[in-house]
Length: 123
Image (tube, rainbow, N blue to C red; front, side, top):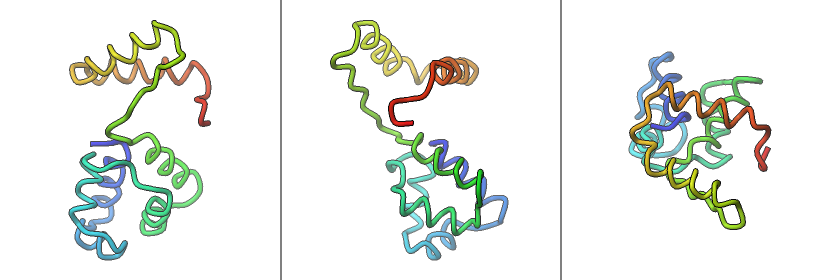
């Protein structure tokens, strides 16, 4: 499951909305929403994120947080270390190899370490 999928599922549960009803309102299939929630589809594009924000009537900071979760929810990523240090390549490969065996606490710690290093290139 992706962070965006987890949040979308929680919003649906809070409001008692089925995937089928939400899918019909958004003009997509329930299978698409299920795949989105479970991380079997890539992160939704900006137009779909905006539809979801509107559907849940999410405003201001909550809408911004939902957009950010969408951009952090690509279930299959590629890390290009060309031109970076050998250590950066080693880190990317170690993370790819071992991410499935990391516990939640370790993952949370790594996220905080990386975020505290400063803004990303895309921010």
